[in-house]
Length: 506
Image 1 (cartoon, rainbow, N blue to C red):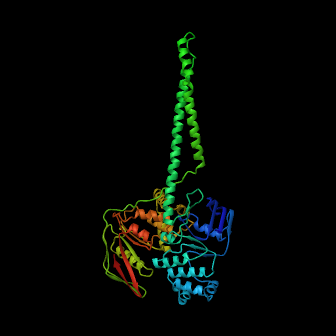
Image 2: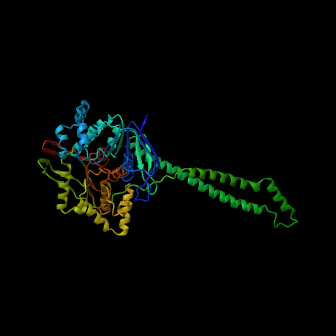
Image 3: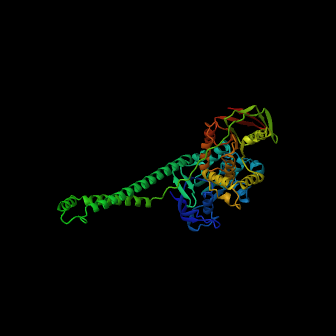
């Protein structure tokens, strides 16, 4: 199978950083799809920029065969070239527009399209170039299940070389059983684990490999230490024996003593301890050679617990009518009992965020904001500044705990130490969460928390918010079925028909 992208001996570091991101990295990409995933800041997008020649490596080569189309996370408008290739008059393009549910009217009015519609249009524009290589960065962020399925159906039929950066385990499983997991434990360079499994299973396999590798390394280290102790003890015993078998100090007329020493020497008692010691030292040297040849597996401390506080108030809302423009969402009486975990589901545009914001506003108006930990879908500039002020007000001890928490959520906390760098959306969500997690808040409301979060953080949040834990209440908006099934036992479904919507309880 021919290689479309061939990377050999790649090294790269940003000029402003003292840390080497990639060192002597070699990878190849052939026909079919490859999923790239890993923690935020692990170099995934940087590698794509190097492939696209937007960044130049410090060393190594990057060879690309064929034309590349790239779909970044954000899409705003069509270029003149996009218009030309989309409307080339071919039956192929007509069929593709139909599969992506895009009409000419939608294509001509990009500014009014929803996020899912824009993502489908972006894919249409890229495929209209008939590329040999298609690279996508988080193509299913913010998308409902219908849009995700539509996009993945089209991507599966792509016949060239496909590369997708994603943390979406469902989409990844639909596309590929080859996963590249990027792991960056500073100050070591990024390690890329090439695993022929779906993203979800690859993450589990990497965790198993790391634990097995660390256990094997620790076992060899323990064996080497034990052998060293035995060798030292035999050395002491040998020295003692040598003293006992020495004729120095014996009376020249003590023929009996001399005879006993000669007999002991004849039987080899003076050599057996040394022989044992030499064999043990030889075995210890063999183990040390194995350890020198192994790379000590680096296991970062990951995972957090959620410290919720005492009495959990019951949360009630409705009946009510909520509006978003001309769209009306009819809400029945909704109740979240203490310790209940509820998933809010529905297609894009059905009013999930409208409902959650209304619930949050009522909760605050009732004077219970001290119980609430609310993580919004996106942060306004005002909210970003609010979070920064909370960080600035921390004592050195508190700041250290926050840095540790961020690290245990799978991210490098260096963005907190560099005031000139803006945290990514994923880093903001983690920071907002850890700032509140020790404050005894016992009602958590999260709007699309899995957007922008990496696979490492997703699995940690799943563990923290597991549905069996009734020490807090949870209201969660998400299209990630794997995430909601792990964290929620109840669900509210929003169903929309035209300009009317309703909430159904399951």
